[in-house]
Each structure stands twice: as C-alpha cells, then as structure tokens.
Length: 421
Image (cartoon, rainbow, N blue to C red; front, top):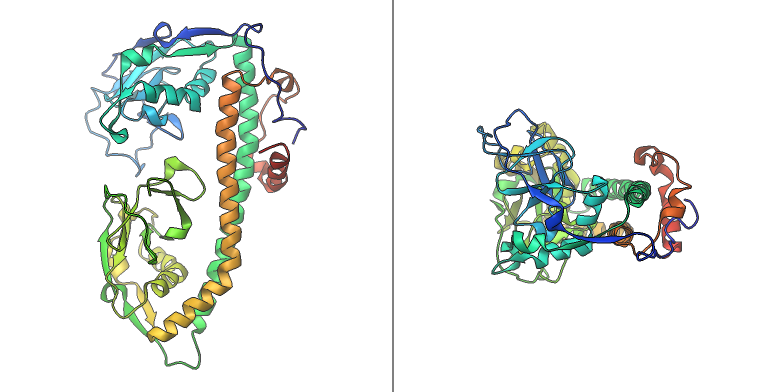
C-alpha cells in the first residue's frame, strides 16, 4: 500500500474554488414513461442504482405491464422516497426504467460519479433523513420541497474528477482486504464443520447407538414472519435456516433496537429478526424450528450445521429458501442419542470449536471496521475535509483489481490499522 494513502491533508475550500448550490438548481424532475424496451433498474441502500436481474429473488415480482415505469437516463438521480433516509438513492448507470414509486431527476453534476458519492455519503443521507416526514422511522416519506432546499458543496470539475479517481483506488484496496477476510472466515468455518462432523460421526463409543429420526418428528417447522416487537434475546439457543445455511444468534449481532443484522456489518444485506416467544421470527425467507421433542435444540443445531447442506444439495439445484421446501427439511434425518449423550457431544463440540469461533468473530469485526472506515473516508473526501489531489497525481490509471490482489490483502489491512483505522 502506498505510504500515506489514507493520511490526507485538509483542503482549503474557500481558496480552492468550492461553491454551494441548492438541489433545487441542480435537479429537474423527469416524467417520461412507456419505454418497456429499456432494462429494469432498481435502487438499494448498499449498491445505489443497478440493473435488476429477472431472477433476482431479493426483490418483488416484475409486473407484466411496465408501461407506467419511469424512464431514468444514465446519470439521472433515482430516489426511493420511502427509504431516502437510509441512502436508497443513486445515479442511473445506464438508460433504464424504474418503479413509478421512485423519484427520477435529471442531475446537473459536472462529474456524475462524484455526485453519486456525494449524495450517498453519510452527511447527505442525514440531510435526506431530515427532509423526510412520518409517524415513525420505518414509515418516513421524502418531502420533495424540503429535499430541493438541501445545499450541496461542490469543488471544481477537475477536483471532482480527482476525488472520483482517488475513491476508485481506495475502494479497490478496501474491497481487497474484505475479500481476504471473507476467505479466511470461509476457511475457518470449513475447519469448524470438519471438526463437528468428526465428533458427531464418532459419537460416544461407550454409549448406546443412536437412531435416525426425521426432523418432522422432532420439532415444529414454521416459515418465519417479521415481528414488530423488540423483545430481548433470552438465554435459549435460537437458530434458523435460510437456503442451505444454518444460522444462529452468535453469527449475528444485536443493535440497540434488538434487530439482527449480518455479523460482518453489511447492514443492507441482512433481514430483520426478533427473538419472540422462545424462537426467532423473521420475514418469509427463513424457516424457524421450535417445540422440540426428544432432542436438545443445541445438539440439533450442530447436527444440522454438519450434515444438512449435503442433504439439501441432494434435494435441490438452487440455494434460495424458495427452492428449499418444507418436506426437504422435514425429511432430514438426525442421529438421536439419549439426552445425556447429546449434552456430552455438544460440550465436546463447543470446547473444540471455541478458539475458531473467536477468530471468526474477530475477523468479522475487522470487516465491520473496514466498512465503517470506507463510510468515513468517502464522507471526508467528498465534503472537502481532506485533500486528495497530491495523492491522485501519483496513482496509476486504473485501480487494482480486487480478485487479482486479494491474496495479500491481510498485509494491507495491517497497513490500514497502522495508519489510524
């Protein structure tokens, strides 16, 4: 990593030509429709605006009649008015069409990519939140007249281009570190699963043999539904299944509202879960297990962790929960021992995997730090808190490719820490 890449001087906005403009002077509403021939675009908090895949299971069904969908030209600002306070906005990457519920504006940015970085940065997302109304936060709706009054601070076009170039390189380096951390987690989880399978396969030789029992006879299997309560998690051992993944509470962290988000800090990819009445409840992409009979929930969790994926692969060619039907879960057979044997096996497993679990958790925290660092860096650069022009002059034309450079990104993460991450 280039020394000082993230150690940046402050910019003098007053003398370097930065100027203030209101969004009112920069945005013109579009109302063009009847272009079903264009690609379908969507907007998300983590990704901004992107071309939607027809088989994307994370979105609602695409309607047959797209004539009422709004046209967004490349560089137009697209806003999800109900989630602008979360940052669900961005500039269209290509000409396309978006939901009629979205706002579309022709945007006057000298460098469109800079405009996207700016409006999606943390300070400006907060401004969109302040321009939203609603009874409670989950129902906020963007007030367009107030949104148009937002003032944006813009550097000259040449510096906008320099900022975009700097952030492209910075994001490549951060992405590279994240890729390496995720690879490490995958290897550790594989190591953990091998250990668990070995312990469960051997069982306890001196104990009576187990019997194979279908999951449908051991517990109740429900489809998760989102719950509006904020019940705190109890000391029980909750877990649930999404696709071929078997998840539990320790794989996630709770925020102040007791809402579960992915443990690596990628808030936009997670679903909302609540611990309620002795089980996790979530939206329709999760199966929940409860009312166990003849088996200890913790033992069942570890058995599913070790052997369920192989069972699911034999039953289905896809990874989404929609393809994982209840009969597949109900037919999964578990080796059931006496309860005292189950407890001994759980204790043995958790003693063996404790160190691995700690390393996985540490690595997830590091990924969270990288995401937080990226958020802070983008905000500081696009708002003129730091000056990147001297560093941009030393950068190669193209940023480093994440896939090619991920192998040594652990060293780069160490550099980030040394430079004040």
